[in-house]
Image 1 (tube, one colour):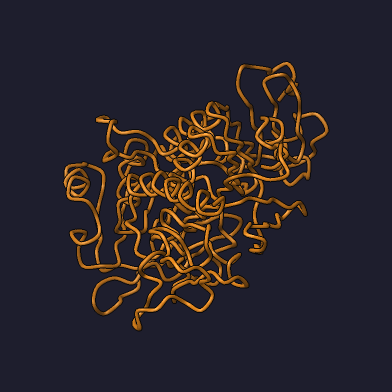
Image 2 (cartoon, rainbow, N blue to C red):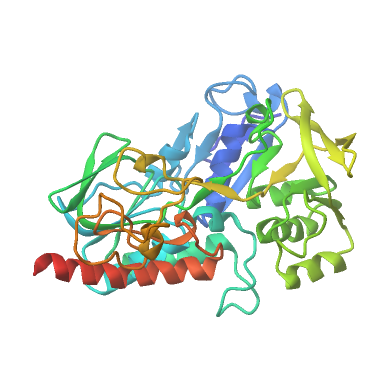
Length: 427
């Protein structure tokens, strides 16, 4: 095989070289797909293929994965952060203080950014990874108003990002809040990079993280055959394979339909006895009509097998939990999530037993009284947490409806209450 010159391979899109089954390469492909950045993936299957790249000796070389940007810039041993910087996604805050800071760029956070900025608030949105949140990994959202043919979560998120930026919102990607302090009527957020962000009000829209199966060797195969969410970037690589999707909700059903267009067979593993109580009826009907989708109810994954990558899963089936080993190289886990609210543990913000942020009338509890940390005479606004001026929207909120449309609606509604709070604060 002749040497490959990545600069000679320059094109109008991002090009990625990496070992087949590399978790690092998967992270890059997933980020590009969720950011709606066109890319070409070159899977390296042998040391000889890897050695054809300049400066690379073998598949396990630290100079892989290699990413070549459209202008010819080469990133050896590329990371998602380096890639985001090259794409211009990583910026510094423009101001010392903002009217509104938003944490999380899922549907709720993006909606809040659009409405906050369009209504004249100095708005900043902080996102630790790609925009879109959990919804951004959805291959097709079919029940969102205005898209009769459906829209991918990544496309919807990218359009919202562009809209927010056009109105003047700042979006700071690859940033994460690790601690929050509420003082002097403002939120002071410590970010993971050591910087600090100050705002007069804030909206927490950090959403949820994909729930794990809880198997001992689960992390070993992450990005090496085990994936959380729809794994849109992996679908074209599933041609000729049998893939397994775990979950009984809409996200799992959408993922199964997406993979069915590429894989030979898709098996949906459902813990419950049926899909009726957990999945929208239109999606249940589509799954039933698909010729290469099999639905197995009362089934759970109990073990994973493989060497450098996933080779088989073990499932427990039926009321007796009979074990069965199923060969596969692809397992996609879509079983809901847990709220991303660890940052709030040392604050006065009230969380429920599952970690969701409690807001509005729900703060009154069984005794009909607001928590002791509430300092104002008025009642908390709807979507307002136990800290005045701090709001929650979307999946992270206690009692929320886990749908894209409702999350976007809450993001817009939260901005309306932010306006009320800021007027109160100014009077």
